[in-house]
Amino acid sequence: MVRNSRKPRRLVVDEETFLWSVGHRHHVEEGRYQDCREFLTIRRLGARGRLLVVFQEGDGRLVPDGFLHSGAVGTGKGNWLNLHEPGTVRALLDEALAGGWQPDNPPTEEMDGWGLFERVAALRAMTPPA
Image (cartoon, rainbow, N blue to C red; front, top):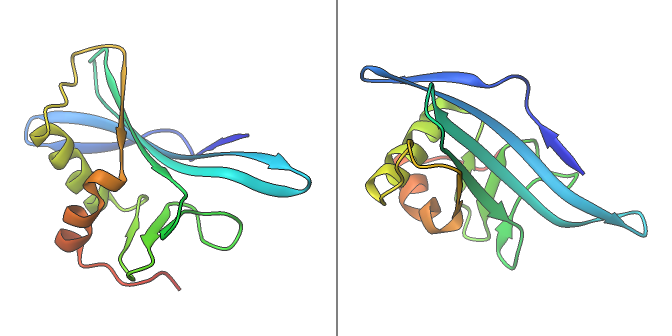
């Protein structure tokens, strides 16, 4: 099952406009959510490529699974990000660009969000969601 946020939102960085949305994927087995992952899709307006930043559930890695709100990703250490906040999206975009993502290179490039998480969480200094 795939769920996406509403239509893509705009993020203007210097002279460039990026479009972004948040989504969720999982399977349902025997009435339970399995293999939950939260993802952020970013693309530059007019570019052919796009970035998919994926946060896969796992040991000490928390994503929405029926208890957390959409966009919440966190660790057992108490660090959290809200993928619906433009500041979080900007920080993830900056990290992806610094890591070599090029918006003009098709097709979709998938990136493990947990590899960016600690740096972005430190920049955002977020607290646990209510």
